[in-house]
Length: 105
Image (cartoon, rainbow, N blue to C red; front, side):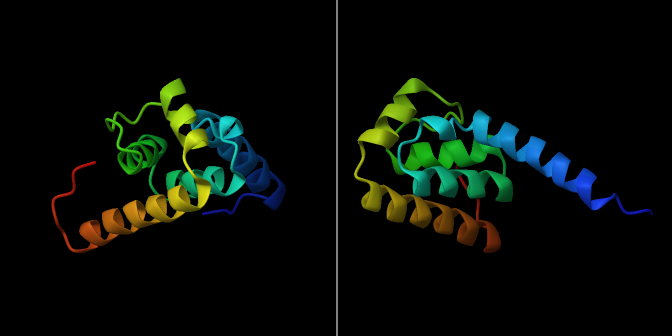
């Protein structure tokens, strides 16, 4: 199989990443670190799962949908606390998957 030119790969990545960033509402998240954590989680999994994990972290119903309520809660929650709790939620999810446990998400 032939490899795509670097310029084409870069363009595809920029378009894809831009779409993911918008789908997650990252432009509306005031803390850049939280926005990047959410984005990285979506790239490793998918947007719906990353939103569900963030909703679980915030004690919201995990619908996987971007809502105004979710953005408001993210922006109202103390950033260092939310960062560490979201990282822990992700870690617990990945550990459960690795262990082959049934994971509710």
